[in-house]
Length: 589
Image 1 (tube, rainbow, N blue to C red):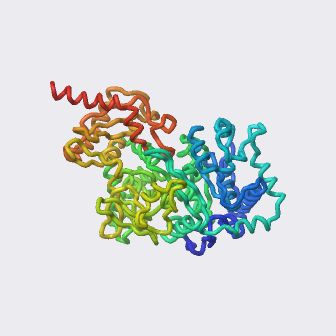
Image 2: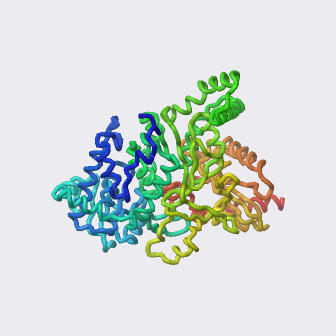
Image 3: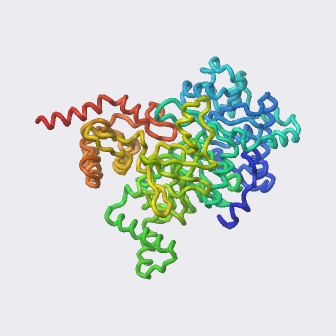
């Protein structure tokens, strides 16, 4: 069956909650592959029947442990099949799932497990079990620890043992537990990544997520026979929604090998049709695809040609024979090589969670790899606007999903309303009231809506730089421009209440191991190019190359690669001060 030959309405399980999606999918297509994962050098399939059995046994195993409807159960693990087994097992038992990033420190794990009052936690392996052991004495609600990979100690039970406990219970008990879950019951507690303070626990119901799955299906975001490649952390709302939607439609999800270096090799092996990602991966692939181009002007012309032809084809226009001939030559020389990096079968990629440069989107589209921008927050059950290869604008975050209302406040803030909006922050009434004012979710993002209904983001309210001269500057576009340099990994523009803008830059450790005069000269040329496109107030006067890349481990990035600006500003305050002192010295001289 070809992708998209069955409508989403026909392909959907028709479930009322997320608790019964796997059960219904397994009954509908038991032999169909639900999941793929790599064991050694071999990709292995897990059928919908096997997925359904695992979920039922885990749900009943939790019942055997005494987990009650409404209890919170955490998962601390990388993205892998067992994460999916556990998550759907938790939901089918009537409990609510709490996701914890596998990269979190013991202190961060403690915050989420304690704040959510989790009664049980699934831990991936010895590394994650050790984190739990360090904090278990300070978790009064935690009664059970279940390990995907047991290290043989007696302070937890293995996943296999939990499933064996579940097999002792009757199927009727499972059916009843699933049937007792309603759309108003809490499905997930997802803790925001905390760019501006401690994470807040978003309360998301089964109804929230069932509705947003329906919305994306109505838009045609996922086809009925996709092969999805997933490396995103399932602790994040983006990956969770993709998983819910794919399983509801009976598609197949292939999981990564837990190694960032394996993402591109995995893509080439798995040959997915659908690839959700964050901008950093597309930036990396863009650099990989363009770094060895001998003639930059020729590359630019090839991109313009690809855009022209593909957009004309999309409009149903006839392309002149001489243009088609040049297009086919460019396809052989460039486009097909780029498509092959993604495995050669990509129907659509989707990017979210952070801004991406329009030049990158144009490049991939020209090569036949549509990368569509979407927008949302954990508070919107992942997504609120989106676009498809048939209906998009470069630089836009798309149109509102069916049933979502968008309006722009007087100060330019994007406000949202719809059935996908969360119920509030757990145990934080003040923050809930601040976010949900008058029935509208205040996103904190600034933007506009064009005459055709496409939404555009200009920046984040809290990120807006107000210079000493009172000028408002949005740093994202400047930062994206500088990140086009292949040597650059991260860029943070600074200038709040300062006389001008400066930038902190980190080198990509895979490309440049240390600063050299040549690298500095290359980055200066990129800064000059970015400056040439903006007015004097928005120009970056000086930049510094930091000694190491930003990372979650060192505290400057969230698990989804968002920069914690306040942490960077504080940690590198002396570097920032030196850039302004440098400016004063030059002026004095």
